Amino acid sequence: MVAVMMPGCLPIMWGYCLGYHVRVLLDSGSTHNVMPSDFYHEQIPDPKPPIQTDLTMRCRTATGDPIKLNGWTQVLLKLGNYEFETTFLVANVQQFILGNDFLRGHRLSVSYGKNS
Image 1: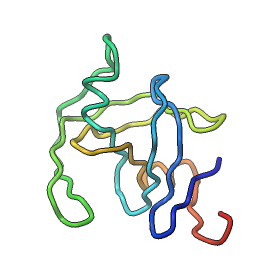
Image 2 (image 1 turned 60 degrees about the vertical axis):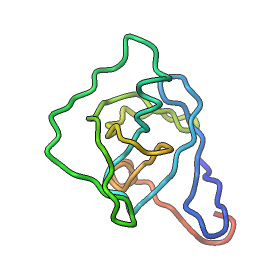
Image 3 (image 1 turned 135 degrees about the vertical axis):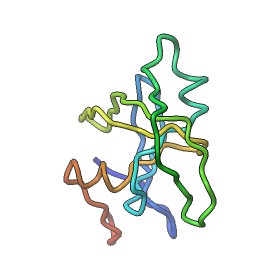
Image 4 (image 1 turned 30 degrees about the vertical axis):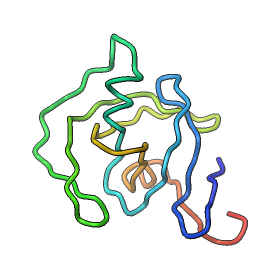
């Protein structure tokens, strides 16, 4: 799998979530995986995977701003030739985020070296 590296930015990958082509930010500083709530509510046709609302946590952006959480869900994510059953927080964010839990859980690492 190859991530696109933009100077001064975190790596971006393209993948598929429930068959939809999505842009995914790889963020080793994020503690959780996050799915945009707009994607969940507007892109995924019914029947949607269930969204669980039994959250007792609060999330913040890297700048400390609170993020509204709508719940969590588990969906199939495809990156390259690999498929992952992945748990996502559903939140008011602009793009998919794969956090440190995903990266560590699948033994993936992000290299910021030249040509990586």
